[in-house]
Length: 227
Image (cartoon, rainbow, N blue to C red; front, side, top):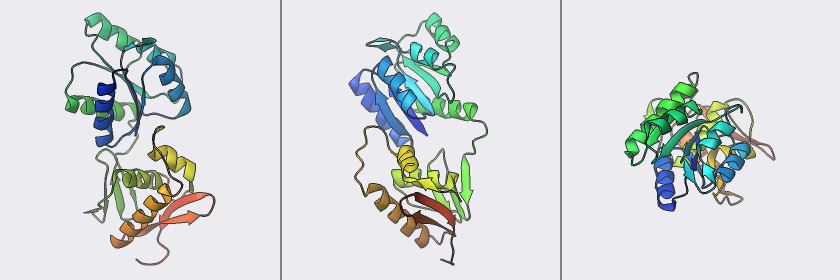
């Protein structure tokens, strides 16, 4: 899942980013209404965590501006504005949830998970391809119920491929699914991660494999030969 943090306090932004990265999210960060709206028009986000007191206006204006847009991310307002009237305004303005600072990190992640399950009720939390399974929420993968030891981005790449099993996934689609705006991507970074995934799937006796289509992308499909 991809999350946008809209927060102008650098220390809190850094903490939120680390928290969401640790929970398995792809994270992008902005610090103003204008930058947030530009980001939301550039990439598909699952959720946006938005402060209300931003340098160029009320963060709630972001929620209202996106109200009629599809696809639209879920919005969680995270703010020090704790008056009942502020909470009511936030929820009536289109926010999916409203959490007041200071907050418990575990509660924030739990609320985001609840929002995601409520907003995307048809999205399975466990996806499979052959004997390979991925728990999207826990970001855990296994082959024949035996856990795979994956790095965070390896898990994200594998998730993107399994969700599109049997279909070609272009390099650009994978990059969008795995990296944030600020991530530095060297030319061979994705290829190196794909190579490690292939090795790990083979060592785990997975009956699916990742094939390359030169100049196009990758496809996850049933192994052509027994592993």
